[in-house]
Structure formats: structure tokens, C-alpha cells
Length: 427
Image (cartoon, rainbow, N blue to C red):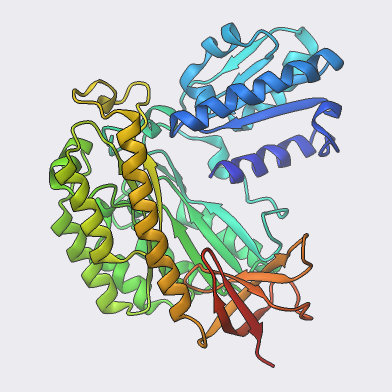
């Protein structure tokens, strides 16, 4: 999501006549687009701003901006803490970026633009054609979250759920397909809640159905889904719509009902398993990935063992796992029985070891199979083409095949590696 916001910022600045600098210290405008979801991400912001000091010393006319979630969270405190910073731009104010830069240049004042809006302007910025791959593009369908999980800072940094109009999304996706994009990824903090803030009937499965009919569009992905809002209609859409890929990212967070209640997730482990069962029953080859948090306040050894059991039972294709990180304004920050860092680290290592073995088993089981692969690019290091299967697994071709970016090919998987697959194009 931050990558796509950065693409939008670059698109806005190009309208001012600015182009990408060849090196950071040569930039006229330097933007740090930030994430606040975990403490480690926030620490990286201040490391980047430390490096910025030298750039500003070399070029005092450089306009230095912090944007994104840390900007929204800290606001004026960022200017107080970082004296060589010129401006702070909140998550709802991306469209104000050109005016903000002009204001700083003209007045030399330090500026903060971080108020929330009832209509987030950046939602309506079309996806730039210079996306992460000529064949693929992100399309934002909503922003914000209204669930208030007790550990999550997103409602405070991104605001409540706001959905784009379906017609606007369809128009953007159609333009992208007409321009050669083969795959789109629909973005939102909770795409399953799409349309619920607008009107009855503007549901996510209905949006997928309309997107499925766009000429030239081969694949549709989406992220992220919340299990609380995941329902049978979405399962049917994934089963019936040919362009919707057989992959879903459905964060579990914990295998313990006690911990899930403390997290305010709104479901039990058995609820989650029931949804997974329906999904696998309708889409037998579906790949399921998830997020997991270890060391949540009050998590006992028994709670953690339930998480390990959940991983062994569900057998996710891949997970993103993290140590609990206390975030500002969240309820979990002040919960009793905080877990020591060394115990968090031990538990995270066990989760990684178990999931790595499961993922490698999936990859090795894929050896000899035939997969549809959409070529996304060419490795700068090896010169070999790479792409993804419909189940979102990376495939590197084993030779310098004559294939173009955006080409859909059939590839035989010849080796399953730890984090990817090695394949060869079938003539």
C-alpha cells in the first residue's frame, strides 16, 4: 500500500516537472514515505532522517518531507524532533503534496498537513502507468479500517473505512487493461468490508464480478482480508470468477481464543477453521497465507502452543510473523503481563522454523507440475525472467528464455526452493 502511495506521489510531482533523482543527495525534493505498523518500521524512519541531515547540509534548498503513517501519527512532534525536516504530510493529504512543496519553497516555512478528510483525495488518483511491473498494477479500492483490533495503529493513522465508487474502480482497471496490464491487485486495509460505508449492495464480491468481465485482464488479486468479514459470497466469487486468482491472504494472528479475544479480532479459532474449510471445499487448490503475532500481552506457553498447533493443522502456504510491538493509542499497549523480548524472540524462531518446513514441503511437492506463470520482469542479477503462479508463488525460469514481460506461459516446475520455484517454459 505504501509502495502504491509512493507511486502516486511520484506521479503528482511529475506534473510539477520533477523527475526521479539519480542519487538521494542530488534531489531537490526528498520524501520519506513511512509505515507505523510496528516499532521496527518506525525506527527505520528516524534512521533515514538521520541520513537526510547530510543531504540537507550539502543542499540547503532541498525540500525534505515525511509522509505516510508516522507523519500522521506524530504530526508537529516530527518537526520538533527533526530540525532539518521541512514538512509533514498525513495519509489523507497526498493530493496536497505539490502545493505543500510550493509553499515551503516560497515561504521557507515548515508545514504540517495531517488532518483527516471525509473524502480521501488520493483514492481518486488513477494508478500510474509506471507500476511495479509493466504487466501488473495496484488499484486502491478503499482506505482505512474500522475494526480497532487492540494492537493495531491503522485506524489512527489511516482513519475509518472509506470506499471508492465501483464505477471509478472499473474505469481505472479498464484503462490499465487497455494499456497492457494483465494483472491488478486490489488494495485496502480490509477489502472484505468494501462498500459497507457507502450503501447496501455495494459489496466486494459484486465488485469482483464486474472486474471479471474486463477485456484483456487475466488476473485479479486482492489484499488484505479480515476473517470477520470473510463470507460465503466471497468464497463463491473466488470459485466462479475465472480471473480471480486462487490465493487469499487471511490473517489469523493467533491460534488461542483467549488471545484472539484480547486482540478484539471478532472470531474464534473454530470460526476461522470453518471459513477455511468452506474455502478449500470450493477452491481445492487455493493458496492461503496469513499474518501471525507472537508474544501478545498475557500469551501463555499454552496459548503459544495452540498457535503452533494451528500452523500445523492449517498448513498455510506462507505466513508473515512478528513479535508483538506496542503502538501508540492502541489498547494493547497498556495491557498487563507484557511478554519479555527474549521470550518473544524464542517463540518467533519456533514459528519460523515450523512454517519454513511447511512452505518447503509445498514447494517440493510442486516439482514436476505445470503452472501458468505471468512474467513480471527480468532479474537484474541473472538476466532470467521471473513471474508468479496464480497461487502467488514466485517462479524463476532456469535459462534466458525468450519471453516478454506480460506474457502468460506454461512452465514445468523443476525444483522447489525455500522461498521460490525454479521452472522451465514448455514450448
